[in-house]
Length: 327
Image (tube, rainbow, N blue to C red):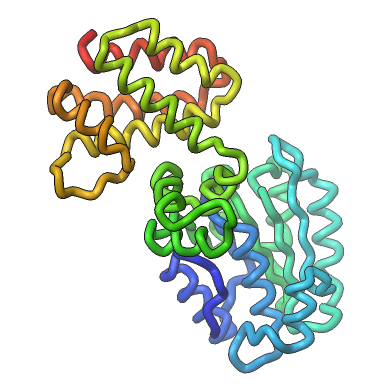
């Protein structure tokens, strides 16, 4: 099987390729990972390889491949939930189940891509389970989810689950620089570090400038911690008032800055790329306090993922950071 032209996650791609080549691809595959890691992109590439008529799949040249690439293959059916709890309705699943018992039009397989499958409620998942228990030989389901924990155990037990992770920074930055007019390798690498190797989020940030804003806020937070200015810290954090996602990203970036300061040496490469701020923290904050700040960032990120009240969350961020630094 040819490389699927999918960046990163080499081991997962090789395993899936072997399953396609050996004609042992599972009837139900679940691809899990956070938004931006390419779950739906991978699902579409796998579907294209499965319908390919060439010897080395995907050949990219046969009629089946061309139709898959154009998104018009009659045996590749996509249903992508709009997002939000219960937005993947049981009626859609029932319609899919009925259609699945009709033979493929052209290919050896009939492939259903169910995007954002975590949006299925229990009724929808149970309706899907009926066909997963005894699927027609030619039917393949590829589900994408942010976390497999959001699916019923009975669905998981009848599926193969693969997890996508962030890409290698060097490999990912080269890819971004080649596919974006807004970044060179160095800036792409900095953004990938901020987003933990998530290419989708890094590319998105290049278009809206969010990373630059978050970087500025984080540097202001570090300066406020060192200067013991409660007002400056609150002012910096107030930038997050209407954007909880930025809080999550900022906690990751602050963690990288504190980690750099903890292990800083003049010859060392910095994950954050913020030499001046890292040096300042290294000289003015003790090792133990840096360790405490790193732990606090993890806790605050977890709170941000769960807490919808930004005002209370910002107050908690200011209090927790000052407490960690002993102020």
